[in-house]
Length: 159
Ligand SMILES: [Zn+2]
Figure 1 (cartoon, rainbow, N blue to C red):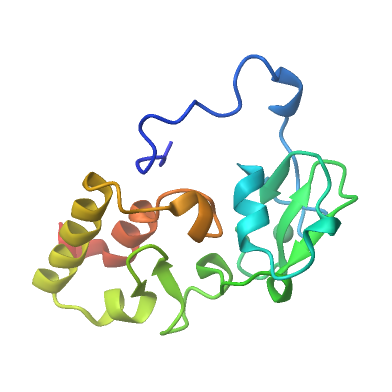
Figure 2 (tube, helix red, strand yellow; figure 1 turned 180 degrees about the vertical axis):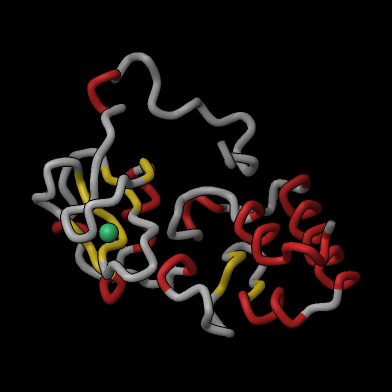
């Protein structure tokens, strides 16, 4: 789990709610979604939260799919134009899309950085995490820490 920002948070979903731990597949692209907390959906949406159902939501990371959040039975879905942030997974090749939403690092910045700069950015993100300055569950559309994405994007530079 890339849940580095909340080491003290209650593990999610717990054994008290086994029914919600089901796999869910995006109603648009058919790919398996990643479970997200309700607060992630609520903080990231740019539409009335009256539209949010009281059900478990999932994040769709398929680049070509417009759906960002959906619930298991597909009765509720939110697309990229209903989200306050541009979603890294949906446009990873854009220069100015954020990859780190807490400390403001863009995909283009990571891509064009030198190996030393890339390592410095990752060290800075890590320092922010250690200082408990991140809020990935409220800022990153995927609802979890960006470091995996940043490291993948930096690739060989940080080897
Ligand atoms: Zn999808």
